[in-house]
Length: 607
Image (cartoon, rainbow, N blue to C red; front, side):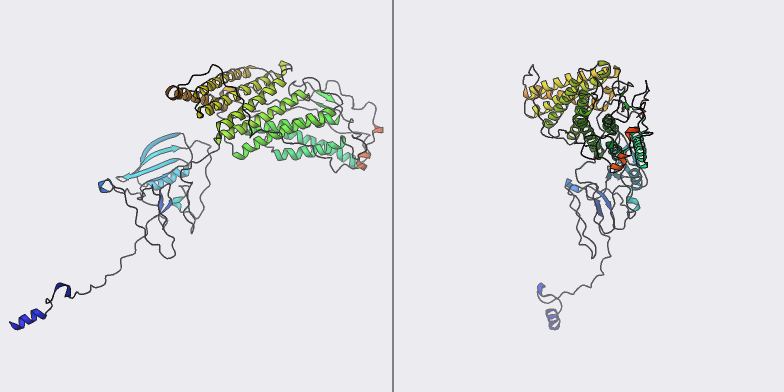
């Protein structure tokens, strides 16, 4: 008993509980290596990829019990040599159960479901340029919540690099090895595509000319002078060909025009400063038609007349080039700038001809001819007004202040009114169609000015005046609509079109209607202001965006002209009955301008 008590007293169970000795557990084997969580390619689009390059499998994450929020996934420390896993977007679902993307804009939408492999199907959709969004999978199928097929002819983004994973080639987003994941676009930003130019311009036909051979038999006494005549003949023919070439660019036109004008200056300016003009100025007779009076030519035996007429045609080409470029279905920002620049260059050429060279003519221009001061001024003002149309379209696209847009539209309407007033004294048989265009554009941009001026008044809590301003815009739009019909029925130089079906006209009509309804609704529910009987006066002055012509100068005399070459032209050996006298009723063939087919959604033919 005593031994047992001793054993119990001093054995393993003896003593208090905190003094009992515990055995250390055996060490367990380390847990197996686990694959790190997937890394997001774009935290805004919620598209996930695994480090191995395999596509993710969309799995719906079960909702937490009790209606609470999901906890953020546990962040593990990065392995040696690997970057840390970026944190997902705070509003993004951590499960990666949604794969969505937004690609080329479309017009038709449909819904459906995709069986088997939704990721491969999404990649095929992305390669075809469609909207798609795959919802969470239910029962082995992925539901397509949105599908929009792209329209034909829509531009597509560049192909992914060769280093991208095959499954990533259809999602229009990829990463290169060793680079952090890149986002397709910043959060909240929408993809922008170039919008259609909402412009339509009236164009008169080009001037036609009789061929000039520059053959002076008996007068040319040296090979250098003969080569100069050959260069003049070839450069003139080359420039006339470019007027009707659709592939001609402003750089090509400028080089060809400078080449011919620099050679022609030897017939106008003297090589030495003893006299003001060359002895060859009146050696050749030139014949040109007019843009308004059809194929009735006017001839002058003066090289200055040739310089002015050819420069006039170059300016007309710049206006037609701008018109063709503005009529494209999709136009980029650089092309819009090219339209703006071409119109300013044309205005500068017309202005330079009017101020510097037309007064030098020995025979003044007849009334109603292209070289008359009134017609040249009308062309200058029209080019300025059309260039400001591009400025207004840019201001509307960038959502500038309505007050600035209204002021620019008011200045543009004044330009068109000034050009119309300049042509008021001309014969209506030649200028009626042109004047209809100018009057139409004046009413059109006056409606624009009243429309945006009404928006400015509405933002200043002057809802009654805003309603009256929009009513005035509606009135001028109705006038423009009537002038569109009259323009299409008027005969005269210029294209036969229906401006009322053009995109620029339809957009303004819906804008005026919607803004007027908004102002009337606001006034009927909030302001309760009296609508004035008289329309507000548009005393608007634009401080920005006004167009000025680009200064223009003809190139200097070519360096090929030398005193020895000029001396090789012996005018004393000129025959008496030479070509100085124009031949009787020599017909001038009209210039065959290229036919430009009407673009989609324009309703007109651009010439």
